[in-house]
Image (cartoon, rainbow, N blue to C red):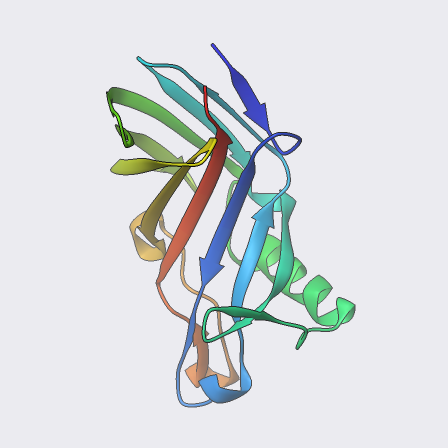
Length: 168
């Protein structure tokens, strides 16, 4: 079974802001730098270290910006480690894999923050890679979305995770 990690694959998390003061905040693209995915035609298993997140950049209208300093990025990572994860161990185990010429649909169980939920992921073949995106609702996993300034600035409860793996 082929194995993938941060040396030959990518995992990114996208967050969006909301609230009265959201104009002074940033949507974010984060990268998971410690993960392993094994995949073949019949099974997919993955583990991710939630404490290995790093801020890639802020986003404005979906485009990267240089709005964050290195200190800002470090503060964000510190807040995530302190306030988001009760357990940094994130696991996915498939229950079914259905392949077709355009990619694959993978159903399985995602364990995040000690809570397990069923998820369905569609992986599309794009060039020589499979690109899978899944929307997650943080409260479903016992995560209270980050908020500051008495709730006038906060992260939306929904986020998007994108995993890109070489074609196998």
